[in-house]
Image (cartoon, rainbow, N blue to C red; front, side, top):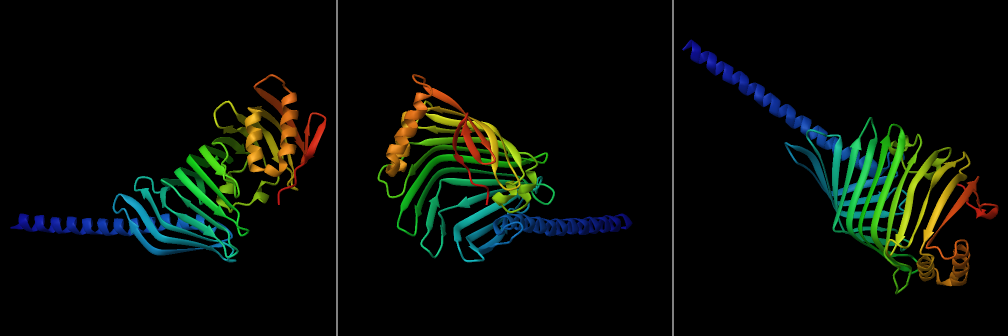
Length: 332
């Protein structure tokens, strides 16, 4: 009898402990799930300015017990000055229990961005996924992957444009205090304003870094934050049609405290005729000017498939060797 009572007492103690553990885990799970939501909403609202209002028509939590997650149906974003509104049918985000600081989000389209003046942008896609890894109080990595994008743009004046692309990937990362950026776009097709003819498919690859720019991930995006910063464009390449027609650029750059750009860039251009044809479709009113530029560039390296040009920028003043080309306005 004594042994039986001790056994029952031990079982009751174990049961109480299990209940406490389950309740504690449930409360902890809900807290982390709310933290995941708060981090996503903080990015949408604006980290510092809180200039955007975020509303969910249907908000709930999911993933218990192995994932911390939430869903937001009928997501509505509105700038506080009522300039633009953004609507999305559903956003789903979750983080695994073993890595709650790593958040994955899935966006379901179509999405619309509009204002009362008549601006309207509508996008839909096959898949749109994003990832955010949090560091000390701010994201240290943001990335996205989108496939099968189709976008239509209508301007207040009635002009309409369209964009389609097969795939796009992007990443920004705080790497030991520096900001690293990478972007890849495959088979993007643009139809310029009110044109029946689309431009040839284009692909873009961009890799660069900004020294001491990692802290920018903890605040709202503002080009003025680039003042006084320096960095390197490792690769910026735009391919047109096939791999025989492209333009690439690389080199170090910096902005002074007034926002003027300085840098030494190397440009390589191949397939000038294709680039000229695309420019004429996009800007038919400047056909003569485009032909002049293409002819001049071709004369620099006659008979060659590609040419390499060095461009210097000093305090916004652009030159090619001793030939001045103009001036780039400062950041505003």
